[in-house]
Length: 449
Image: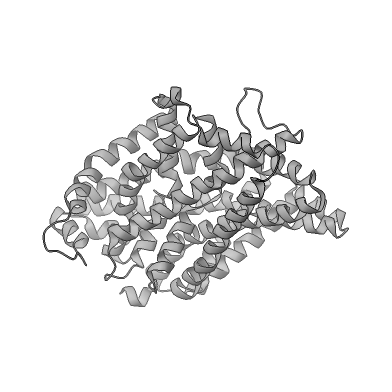
């Protein structure tokens, strides 16, 4: 069945694709400022710890469910169910997962389109096309709609190519390009005046915050969301893994690449912010906290680039190119969630499934663009603050409680070099049954409160 659906052709290809799914805009614009606002290196240490105490076990739940079923989210949860009630609930969870992934992509495509627009605006301005440059960088319905459609077409083109010839091939190109660009930008920014102050904010731990409840909860949430958990993207990618691969090792490698890139982003973003401050750019909000997310990306850093003349144009093109790559590697995995369902449920070809899913999600994005003030924030809140943690909880419950333990252990034992249960096989089933659901519930309660 896996060969008919498609399969990753290499371990490197899977790691790049899965890490690309996890490495999104939030890793690059959100993690560094969260670290700076929560004790610097103290936050980084707690984040790294929680990434492997929480995110890695939940990641393994998705990958293991996916490979066991070699099918989409609905198929996977139905396959481990023991009765009709569990299958019915699994179907509901799967449908919600497909809808949530589509909903996230519907707003993600808008923001990603902005990245493309800003990336094109700088060289166009340098070439004298100031009207086009201004149009691409200023908020408007037509600009938002066009750039969203461009981004969705790019995403569809990759996904329509299939697992090995589309997702894997492009992930193996885009992810190394992302890492090289990130390192090169960080090394250059670190040579500029003001960078040392930003580096100190990032690397010097504020030990007074190490036991702060806010720090722990923020690090917990960052660890969970940074690996793209809870919407079935990792489950789908897991379903394309060969039975010959050793899952615990693969999962650990994906987690290491993801958290490594998030930490590496801190060496670019925070020094760049303080370089901007050294040039007179405001980097703090009225409450005294660092500006973050869209304000950081579309106000602070552009102001820095504008202050650097020709060098700023090159840096802006590289930076927004970096952000566009990060966005695309994530959007590919999100579009694959509904596409895999359409392919398996209706026996459609990938091009037809990708086209239909793209049209539906683009229509959702268009509705958001047309009612931006009303829908944009609402969609983000519903999909990421509520639906995603609930889905993560459901996946943990199915992996830990619904799936028969003997069958779970049999799946984990594939390609183990020894017959006796490994340390991972001894602790993970218990951990995903009790600890992971508890932590996800805590995140959910904290989010709602």
